[in-house]
Image (tube, rainbow, N blue to C red):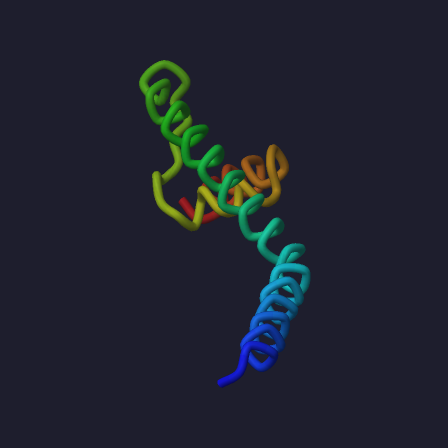
Length: 88
């Protein structure tokens, strides 16, 4: 392989890497935001369960509830409480 071919191959690989980064940057940002909000929802559920003895309100500490609270926020929390109230 000559030097010109190596440079051309390097430029093509660089172009493909930059194209992939630009293509997947928006979905990656959304995925990281959902992950971060789900972690915050999980922390909120944990704090809610710490105060369950005083308030009488408790929700299951699982990934589904954390994702619902993480994506929907306070309305998601209210939705889960209403769902628990209806089903129990």
